[in-house]
Structure formats: C-alpha cells, structure tokens
Image (cartoon, rainbow, N blue to C red):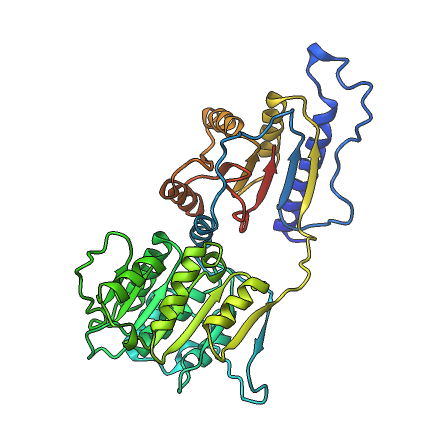
Length: 423
C-alpha cells in the first residue's frame, strides 16, 4: 500500500472513530442526556469502501424552519452560477448518443484540434486558452459543426464540458473578416451569461485581429449600428435591435446559436422572442444547446431547429463507492458546531459546502467558523446575482475553503467538492 493510501485510510479510520465518539461524549453537566435514546451510534454506510476523502455528513436539525422570505434561485441565475463553479473543463464518463437523419452517413471524431484544419490564428487562440485536446462533446460535435455544407445541431451538454468553446469556435471559423456586419448571432437567457460567452469569444479570437465581438444586451444604445461580425445577446434586446431598430440585418446571419435552451423555455418571454428571431432569419446554420433534454425541450428544439444532428447524453448509473456518509445526532446549534470542529480536526478537507436550512443559521455558523480562523464564504438566496457569482468564483478559485449556504441558494452547485455537510 502506498504512503498516500495509508494516509487516507488512517484519516478515514480517525474520522469514523471521532464520529462514533460524538454520540458517546456528552456534556459533563448533562450526564443523563440521551441515556434512554434508541439512536444507533453513527457508522459509515455499509459497502462503501473508499480510497478518497470524500464524505457527506448529515447533522440532525434542531427544529429550525426555513425562512419564509428565502429567495428561490431562478433557472437563469442557477445556470450562470453553475458556469462559474465549473469554470474549467470537467471530466465526464457519460457516453454520447448521436442521432442523425441518415444513420448510414459517416460520423467523424477528432482527437486533436489540429485535425480540424482551423485557421492558424484561430488554432493559436484555442491553444492559448489552455485547450490541449478536445473534450468528449468537442471531439464528437466539432467535425459536424465545421462541416460544409453547414449542418444544424441540437446538443445536450452540461456546464463545464466545453460546449461554449465548441460553438464559439464554430462561429469564429464561419466568419468572413472582410464583411463588416453581423454574421453570427448567439442568444443566452441572461445578461451575465451573454457577457461570459462574449469573454470566451474575445479570448479565442485574440489572434484574429480583424474579428470583432458585439453585444446585444441591456444598456446597448438603440441607435447603434453593428459592424461586429459576431453578436452575443439576450433574446428581448436582440429582437428589438435586430428587428425593431434595424441595428443589424437578421437575414444576413449565417450562424444562429441558442444556448441554455432549457433555461430559455422556462421563461415564456424568452421562448417567444427566440422563436420570433428564428423566423426572421434567412438560411443559416442553427445550433441549440441544452443541459437537459426532456419532452418540453425536445419539442422546442424541433420547432426551432430544422433537420438537426442531435447529440444526447447516454446516462449511466454512477458508482458511489467513493462516498462515505455519516449521520450525527445533535441536540442543538452548539452541538452541531462541535461536530463540525471535530470533523475538520480529523481529516484533511480541500473544500466543503455546509448546507443550512435558514439564512439565520447559515449566518450564525459563518460567524462562528470565521472567528475560529476558517476561510468561509456565505451564500444565500437574497443576495444579488453579481454578489453570489463573486462568492462562488472566490470559492471556485480556492480563496475560501468552506462555503456555507442555504438549501435554496445552492441547488445544483455541489459538483467538484470534497465534502458536503447538511445541518
């Protein structure tokens, strides 16, 4: 056994012992506490041997009720925050299923970006961004996205899998730098997502000095005439600028991208605006990306994207062998804090998220842990989106080791973590 494996085993054994002791060691002033309790001492869940320090600890709530005014995170905000959390590529074991009109037509894959015959300055920009090799969806989608004549595509892909870079690369490869008007239009459900996509495009086009990126988002002057070859925006503003104010000609668009389609259709206005834009387009390549692909998304995609090649995730049952779960029964907030302190004293935790039922308990725990010297971030639903984004970005970059959050605020943001704790 390697030194690393031995250290991991030792830490896990220490954690299991410490967790067991938590139910045995009670306050000396309350020696009769729980003597008549039928609770079972917490142990690791059966059949969960592990060589990683990844644990989920649940602490019994002490009658706390959620805040009545806790703010539900919208799908648009959740999508943006997931993108920040997964700011770099993540490895996925999920297989991709490719559906096309003619199953006999050849299907190509690439293992390097050099295989795509990109413009030298575009290839240079791709490598400058740190993309050494295509991700799974990129190696499958890019040969079709860059094919001639252009092919429409519907693709299911989670944040962090490289799909933004895939459709940005497609737009940049289709641009004619000699034409000083919009040729590619990309829509996202929120201002923040549109700006983020634009930042990716600007970085990738770093060495394509004649390519310009424009934004059709709130704050854009209505009398603006777009000369940028690529326009990235939100549906309402893009519809107003392109159709009502003639800021650019929708008929001249050659690539139309609809990102986060599942989020888009959750807002009726965005859905209707996207359809209206699509109906004003001329003949062009149409690309739709969605994290989910349920019946509603499928119908929307089929209504807006004609004759597409479809890439879907083939879900496989994920193994949870590396997850250890512990249940600790506590009598109140102070007991919970002692439990957390014991856990952090037993194992080396890279980063962890602590879930609380209410903003009040989250704030209390944040103050306690901060006073004890922990680098803590506090995330709750009432914070403006830009503040939540900044907190998650700091956590993602390692500035805080612990993120304390309410259940409502943190839905969908528990990926890439060493430890999760529910209080």
